[in-house]
Length: 160
Image (tube, rainbow, N blue to C red; front, top):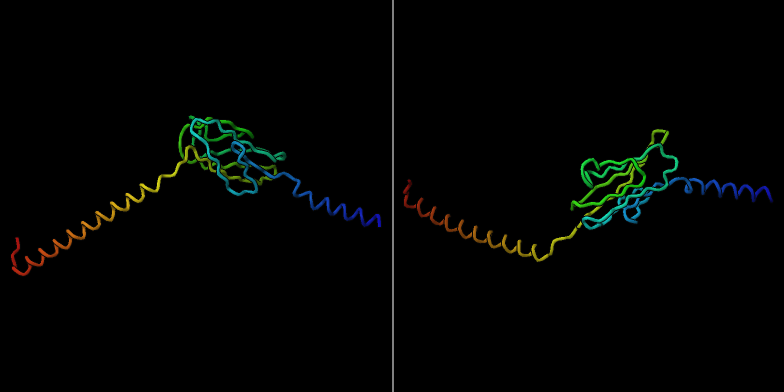
C-alpha cells in the first residue's frame, strides 16, 4: 500500500510539473496578458507606462517591439525584461514581446496599447447620414430634370 501512495504522489507531482514551469506573462500598468491571448491597455497621453515580463527564467534573451517609436527616437525595440516609457503620441501601439530560448524556440505575447483612445459621438454619424441622403436626393432630382430636357432636345432634333 505504501508503494501505491508513493506512485500516486509521483504521478500527481509530474502532472503539476508542466504547469509549474515558466509561463510567460507580460503587463502594461498592471494589465496582465497570459497564455498568448492578445490584450488591451488604455493610458492617457503623457502617462508613464511600465511594461513587465515574468516567467522567463530559462530564457536566452527577450525583445519588446512596440511597432513604432513609443517615446522618442530609438525607442521602438528593447531587450530589457522591464521597460518604462512616458508615452506622448496618441494612437494605437501593437506591441509584441518575444522570448528566445536556448533550444532556438520562442514565445510571442501580444498587447495593444491605446493612448487617449476616445470614440466619436453617435450624433456626428447621424448628421453625416442626413447630409448624404440630402445630397443623394438632390442628385436624383437634377438627373430627372436633365433627362427630361435631353428627351425634349431629341424630339426637336436640335443638336449643337
